[in-house]
Length: 435
Image (cartoon, rainbow, N blue to C red; front, side, top):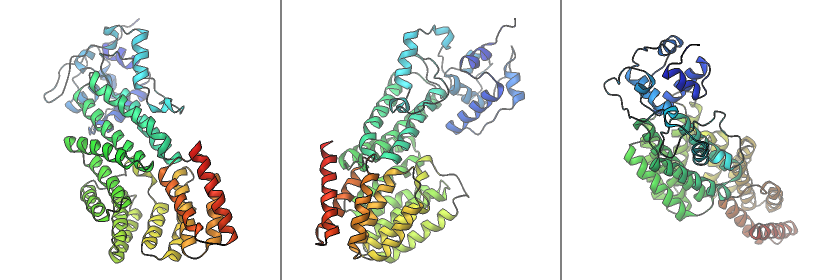
């Protein structure tokens, strides 16, 4: 029976039983780290030899991140000049115990399991409280953020935010108590900033504006220290929404323009379209309808080019025709043209994917609001009441605020449909508040 080389033993322990599985993991890790490097099946076979050739510096960094140890400990000569390495022993050398394995599973399993969602399909590599964190663990933690984004889209921020805060604490704890190579360390810090930003977004959606400011401040500090333009764009564009929400549209415009300046260099038309729409929102609140219309037209032009340039980040997946229709409807609303707003808000609701439960609830109530303001109180009242069955699973402070606005508007109408709707909406709000 042939004796396994250290490299073979390590990749088998990580669950990469076939060459294709290892190559996929290698290229996924390279993408996460931003290392422009690839490995062929031939190179992989050469690495399996008892005396493997030295990987080039970029491949060395990827291997270091994948296994959480210096490739030198996997049998490779080196390190090459410029490689960042450490001296962490292999898992097999450390002698993992069942308690060690359970400990990391508790820390690293991510919010997906906490939310009873399907966890990442690849098993976590066992690691002790003093052990190294590798790419598999980083990807597991990123899966937690991905699950948070999905939960937010479906249900809103009120209930999801506690899960997000727990996930942020988990990432911070791993940052402060575990060992990892420098490439993984940067990605962990960046992930902490992204999770903090999402905690801010969830607080904003839950209408906890102080909480949102606190988390966004932390995320912006991380983005500044790491000089990460993607995270800066995300934080500035989120803070722009909050400024407009709180009646500070000029500040909202400045924040959106700061985001746009950085997004231009990133080369994603979808990202620039999102920010242009937020610039338009701020401008409409400043009663500059002409410039707001120009920026919104630019946002529509950019989304038509979304298949060119760099792909948008995951958080931007919500943006498309539905969101632009909604932005156009809001533009008309702010300018007092409620009849025109109705047309675009109907289109927004028709175009919105059903997986975005919170946005559909928001669109529906915004449309009801505009119908009442445009003089069609009966249809607005009927739509508001019909929306109640769609709100059962949505927990969003913004949606609750919109429900109160529609109820207040309908109280100003003395017709029977409006009075009946007010009774049903009030009863629902009281029941929701008592739950």
